[in-house]
Length: 452
Image 1 (cartoon, rainbow, N blue to C red):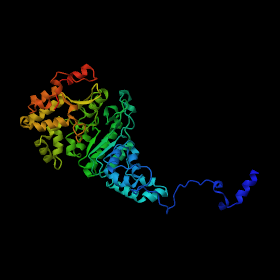
Image 2: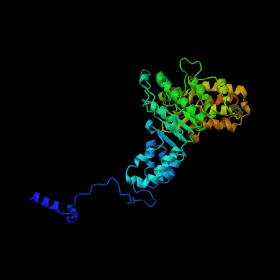
Image 3: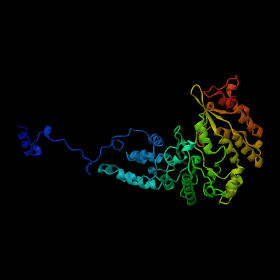
Image 4: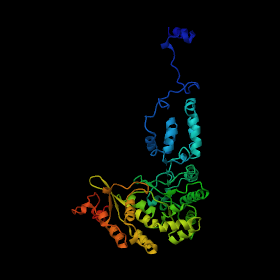
């Protein structure tokens, strides 16, 4: 009986079958060329995105990986045309993401995608390559340089590697963005998962050589005009080879990098180097963890000035730099801040200057600056700037910021015209101390502090 029914149905045409008897339609992988996709009132494809202002979406994009940003650009025309120009930050966590967005066309394989986004994707590819679609990008963070997480165990030096693919791709990728202000290159460490720059003490010679190649590539990009002259590079360090009397990578850097970037560079072997501060912040919970300017292997200030003066515009820049007292204010405003979490869970910041920085300030003062004539408001502002996490970030609220008493009196003894009333902390009126969850020996130096 079953065979008879089956054969009789097989002899019928499609129009002779009842609707319930017809086989289910196979899903179409591609819609016909002449069939228009469903669109929302704003002209976007129906589906995935709630209606939010482009500025709001751009803020979201600033915290996504580059792959996710590009995927979002292919989701809807609004994302592509209105949101992407507002994106200001890119995060790269794999070397394969260091490309100019050409893969958007490869996403549009089906005719459905081609119908919706073909023209937009072509424009996106071309505009990304010319820096137009991402014209708002000022920060790029590359986390793939350190080839996975960095093991800070001294016995694990040989297991830490620098990713060669990132080294080779980084500079051509960065050259697509003409308005960059900041680039961080580094990775993450294993103990706490914190973001760190290149910690040269934990790498073999061969891996350090890869970083030298990257730095020299960046130098060449600056000299050729491929990178913005407003760009600051964070996370890298230039160290001399064993047979070099003077670090050639550092010399190349002094001859190539923007002047504004060079004056913020530290000495890679000092107690205040970026690597030392990074390791301290990992080991000590109260030390603020940050991303640091590049360090170089030339400590002499005279040598740095000499090579800067050799460059076009170097003499004029240094004259402006010293005459405006920018160097002095920079040393004050970059004092490392200490983070304290109170028993109530509030985050407070304390400034306590280290001895080596005090000595540098004294050297500057003895050279050409009469600090007694500096406006009190300018000095106070420089101190306040040190409480901000970044030189472009706003200063934290007053009630979070404390100036260690030792730093206040050290600056006063040097002759700086700062008023105690601008910094006196209100809890000193009643003799109370700030309560924290730190051990007593760690808190002692930070009590009886001042606040503006």
